[in-house]
Image (cartoon, rainbow, N blue to C red; front, side, top):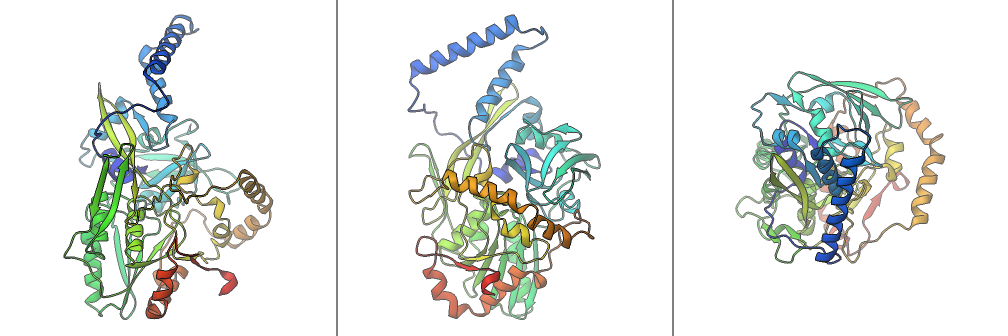
Amino acid sequence: MVVGQNLSREIAAVTVQAAPLTGVGSSKQDSKQDRYENLELFQKVLHFVEANYVEDKIKNKDLVYGAIKGMMETLDPHSSFLPPDVFKDMKIDTSGKFGGLGIEIGMKDNILTVIAPIEDTPAWKAGLKPNDRIVKINNESTKGMNLVEAVSKMRGKKGTDVMLSIYRESFEKIREVTITRDIIKIQAVKNEELEPEFGYVRLSSFNENAAADVKKAIEKLEGKHKLRGLVFDLRMNPGGLLDQAVEVSSLFIDDGVVVSTIGRNPDQKEVKYAKKGNARKDFPVAVLVNSSTASAAEIVAGALQDHNRAIIMGQPTFGKGSVQTVIELGQDLGLKLTIARYYTPSGRSIQEKGVQPDILLDDFDPKLLAEARRKQDYFREKDLKGHMVNTDEEAKEFKKEELDALSSSKEKKKGTEKAAATDKVKEEDEMAPMKFNPKEDFQVREALNYLKSYEVFKKLAIEQRPGSGAAVKKTAANQ
């Protein structure tokens, strides 16, 4: 969930799409009689608590709200109950009076965790990084707090402060970070000429102008030299608006499916097609992704990969392949409910698995090398408590003993890898904002090298698409 300017915008950014429910079905496992019996049990418990609980201040409404909240928490982590204060905020046109921090958050091991800070926002400038654990908000523990509640507490009037207590593996102790809320105005697109005829475009969020701004960035690069190749950077892009994902995809493909969404019932299917007329096919594209590439960004990466329009390079993406809708219940109440999964043009679900790169690249920044090698520490959809599993027949799961081994191995490494990593940054401020310099970025350089060798690698890359063979892995061992 994105902590930004407007909660309705945040929900759009995280959920990708809000679609109306076409019908209400019942679980195959539960008969009508079972439901009546369960409701009778709930009524008995409610009555018993109201009549016998030691404190007489408890309200019936609080008990019912608590029960609904608990019900939603048995589902996936993107479904939640929206109580009056949160639902009201969601519907208010804030008109610049309320601000946020600019981070995508989720739950990992029941702890509020940063998926990605959005570039140039207050959270980014404060030095928050992926996988940071937020253990307190304004000295209030986040234990037991759901995502909607956390977002509500981090929002507030522009110019006011919020204090986050942050745990990071390299920290010796929890740090308090004070961040000033601001209206989240994102410069979502940046561009640079890497070399004559080879351009770089970075898209950090799918806001309402994403496609138009990407198109302008490409045109600006072509104003210098005719492009022979483009590096399209979607790393640390937490997603955004579905229509912009379709529009951005349409800049590179002009025919066919971009994404499909399928609900529980067979008739709950929607297909989005590329829009004709804007596609550029006169230069090769290398798309960079990582574990913080999520939602709408995964739609674009998956579409360009399935249409063989781009080579995907980097790390497996976050793996959020679900669609949510917001349902108004009256009395200023609402539900945010997962109603469908989305699929790439070839029919792949990226839920939990993410988009698998054609060429795997580690991040060879010395400060991040140890973390890059501990891939089990990357925070992805599969780390969220109660996440939906991928139902594709080819999906595989770790065996219990493998997971136990990973956990054990992680503990053993703490004294060696952690020490090596922290020694290199000991004299630097670990809360310094991340900086992108494309010309000095290892993954960007590798993407550039690929584009220069495009004709040689074109056939190889297509043959090694996921499902037709193993991806190429580039690591320190074969440099």
